[in-house]
Image (tube, rainbow, N blue to C red; front, side, top):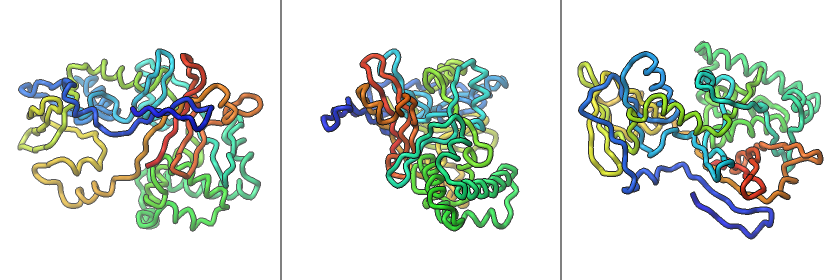
Length: 383
């Protein structure tokens, strides 16, 4: 965390920036939890983010033995919550879980409480904030678009939703496959939508992918837009922060089964088993884990950093190199109480979050800073 004191704005108290890098992993003072490599297990899971943790959770329910190896010195991956006192917490990574997220079933199963929000958000168009002050998404669309824009947005949404259904059903026709060859931005521009509607879609998707919508294919972009097209989905936020979920899963699967600060370097396939070579980053000691199966849950683009024996087929390697999208970091900005006039209307109703197609991707909701007074605002900044 980097703390910056600012004198430029008297409403601004301080800024804390959280970068998505693993500098803490190589701190020699941190003692990694190196698992017993002599004990064979059924499955070795690489990565203790939400995918790795939930994989272990499912295996435990099925009575299958497992070990989890995590590069970082904490579980959770990109789901992480910054806590500033006993009452103030702000997400420093993944913010919400949408309706189609299968984790919602597990969240309910674990008895974790959530609260819901609206699908769409305020957004900036031609320097002016289009404020979400409506009771429903439908009312919001009517408040920001004129009748012609509404009709064009509805028509385009219905057409695009059919493509989304095809993707879900894995029915890829010639046209759908052709969308790999054109960027999402170019594809939407060819639709000749009203400029305000086009900009609205741009503001929705770019913070999601952390880069320009001309950097991904239309096929990928349509998949990313599925939450906002046709019947929209609602986002759900975990009360107490996302660490509530990751810590509870880690406790459930057993901390003794998780090795932290473990850098996996090689997967070796044998006749009836697999070997995983890893290094304890706190001691630089090497371990070889043996299992019937290995599951990698790390980001696909990071697979290029690992050795595979035998080597992955060329087509799979090429596919891995196409997986890197954009990136972002979060900045937590502390404001004095009087700054709320910038994100509330005359009645005190907040119109956060606000989306933009600029490097300042999203201004998330303001959290009350109960200890010091004022608010903490979470900025999702695309890099």
